[in-house]
Length: 234
Length: 187
Image 1 (cartoon, helix red, strand yellow):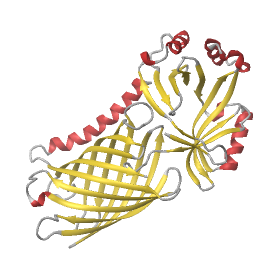
Image 2 (cartoon, one colour):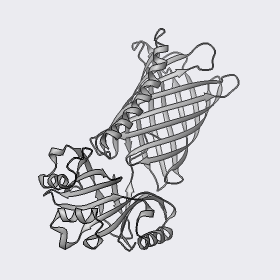
Image 3 (cartoon, rainbow over the protein chains, first blue to last red):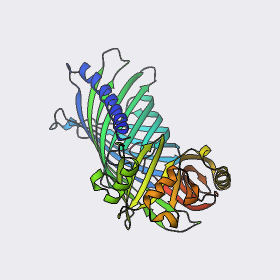
Image 4 (cartoon, rainbow over the protein chains, first blue to last red):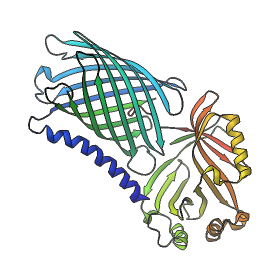
């Protein structure tokens, strides 16, 4: 049983590493852009079915950390989730993105989102499918996006995740912008590890590989993102 | 996983912490019992559990197509044995009682896990070897059968996962709420 469990876990990790490695090797000549994305998330269950989430996300380019433009954006996020059934959730939110706040001529983006997710529980292993619609209102443009993400996390020690223990999290997200003028697509594959510090707090690190401009016709661009997130949930 | 007892029954709260452990960390008497029945079974997983007050040990194994979970006290004596089963495999009387309870108490219920639990009768409680022999030989006179269900559903204003314990007649003995980990990192 142990070997079967390890085999299935290793298989999942190998698939994600493959997804990450293929575009990485293709982009090796031009080199991807490196980003550090620290985040802080606070969520509170306000009723049997409703959860409110506040998050702060910061995008730092690691290309030239001394440059003022290396701080690419600061993004406060507010969202809510409603439990429809033990497995289905729906929700929505509003994000505000303040781009290049330290540079002259900063810009902004308002983002509205609607989403639905389906959770499967396999003991303490969780598989989540999420569909999301987004409306991006920028200083100079408007964009509609559709995103689909599949996420899987599981404890690395024992059959359930207890305080002090680690877990692995794998995600892959595909998205497309479907405005005629800005139609494009992107894939985001990530592999991360988290620590459940207490029942209500966890810290997660992940490496995400983004393959961008898939439909642009000008060639793919690539981005490597190192994410660190601290979660508090009440 | 945190389990809360339903308000309709007791108000106790249970918070179990489980750790995967090596074979050598199990009580000696527990290993002797396991070796008596499964001397050549390599895929046995071992765990220690605590609810903050009581510490127990558990061995999980697959034998003849069935998954068993054997819980031991720190002395190495067996507390109970659980066997993963399908609803169709349990006695029809118990199944009827369980179905009736689920229909009365829940809407859109889904059974996610069902275990047949064997607890030694006093007569056999002191002899772990006899107890396991009785289970494997299905000698039902010599042990108590209970059924432990994990379900998802809605009950009144509560929505989510629950753990239910029924006796051999399908009468409810205990109902606890399973509080799952936050989905904030994955949703």
